[in-house]
Image 1 (cartoon, rainbow, N blue to C red):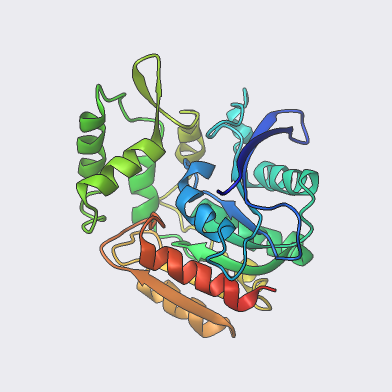
Image 2: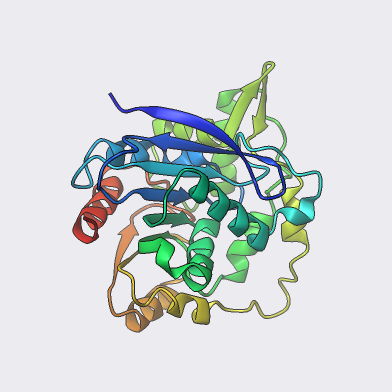
Length: 292
């Protein structure tokens, strides 16, 4: 039986933040920290976290999955401008200090992978290895435009069947390998049921963050930040149909990083869900190979 616990802690500015803890806190095994995408939550990592905590990554490990402010069970910030990478990074570091994690392997999906690159620059001793899920130093404008088109703007579906139909319409062209059961899992990870209504698990004001971006202008790349990962073992995951991490960027990442490997998830786009057994097994195998 894997121990799973929700914890609520105060961020640097006093906002209540939430994280999920899996597995044993005590022991010598290197822990794992999971960081979700922009409008995603700690719940996305539940299947992966249970596998890691249960010993599939060599030995049972302590896993922490974080809800950024305004997402999941963390409180919503009254000032949407605080949905900022710098503020979130300070939150992450504060939470990890509170749960006494001085170093860990990081798994970052999309925005979570950007946080990994930033943490490597500012807190290099915090990281022992990194899994970047469908994210790299170059962000494709068409992927950002697609995400901006729906974050904070989706209607509340009337039923789970309506929710699945909505998500298929938005993402079905990129996630061609999902079964009906997979779509239901995705819907339940994305929406919460409250008072008979299905609502998003994030603050709709996140759309302001995306609206503030000028996608007509060149998007700054993050190659200098990526170079900060060069001393760490790295696994880069790309969805076969991703429109945010291109094949060319992945190839350049593997060329520039001396200790990087990759995984292509067939029939999935941005970002791979990490719910299928092959993906979970590969991530666990990577962790087992680099951790003590």
